[in-house]
Length: 393
Ligand SMILES: NC(=O)c1ccc[n+]([C@@H]2O[C@H](COP(=O)([O-])OP(=O)(O)OC[C@H]3O[C@@H](n4cnc5c(N)ncnc54)[C@H](O)[C@@H]3O)[C@@H](O)[C@H]2O)c1
Image (cartoon, rainbow, N blue to C red):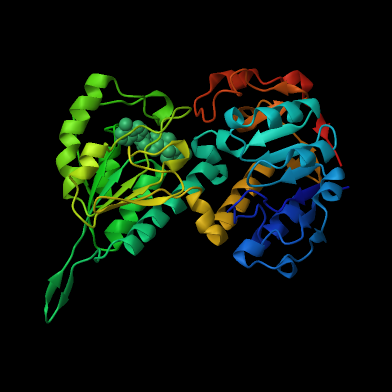
């Protein structure tokens, strides 16, 4: 007996990641997986099919998923792939159900048990599975590297016989996983770094990384360690406190997000107009519309003398390392449900219950269609223990 696992080649534009890497193959085989990989799945990161030892390479994704007990991917697969899956099979990938009503409908119709990677709870026990964190950390690093390529100056202080240049002033706005990694990276590269977040709890983290913290006197700490939206009065107060920091910066990296909402605007057009010529904004929140009023998601634009860069799917740009971490995140999740060559889902396990999006033709959470990321979702406890079959291959 074994569990048939199929790994898809990503099809969305600019997606370079793959849900399986060679280092994870033996781990999955040890759990009882028989692995199948769509041919060319690693092409975008120069990972040849031949690098995957003990994995069956298949050309046709439809034929591949037909017999699969578990299908692994990074992005949600095409609807035709869902239609070709076995009734009751398992799908593990990022979903963001609010953006995917048709896909969710198909998952329900095919009674697919779907585990949505963005729903992994942010608890200590699930850290090894937390793909939001692994991918955000890489995005934070990438933002600094990208910023450097757009700056016409250096980050550290460099002394030559002709004089001294640098250091650059870097402001990181939004100090979740990505923001903290951006601070750490900019610090390592010798910039003078300031951090800002609407949750004052982040101050200590910024200081511990060697940055200073911009205190606006507003606390918008929301549920589960996330931020809440600001009131108009709070926005005015924050803007007033931030303007001088924004306009003194050479490089600004923004990462602010509020679960289920559009990206909060942290930098107004007026503030950009007052920035230094040659300054650069890297807006990592482009998927949610961006943190800067001038941001055009997916584009690099010049506004006066300021360059505003808004990359989409930043982790994918570091596809090799992003795939490695993502594949390990998925392995850690699968290890909760694969043992002795069979799948046994323990619906009383908080991580399983909260990560499941659909099971046996039902949504595991009534609000799943409208909410993408809910770390302290108490309702997941209600996720149908009575209907939890052990699935054997
Ligand atoms: N325990 C764990 O295992 C674990 C793992 C990862 C993250 N977390 C926690 O989860 C939480 C969210 O992390 P994330 O990286 O997903 O965050 P996120 O991507 O949801 O948001 C990024 C940051 O933007 C900030 N933000 C939102 N609105 C803002 C505004 N108007 N102005 C300034 N900043 C604003 C948020 O406070 C957050 O720090 C954090 O508390 C983090 O510490 C816990």
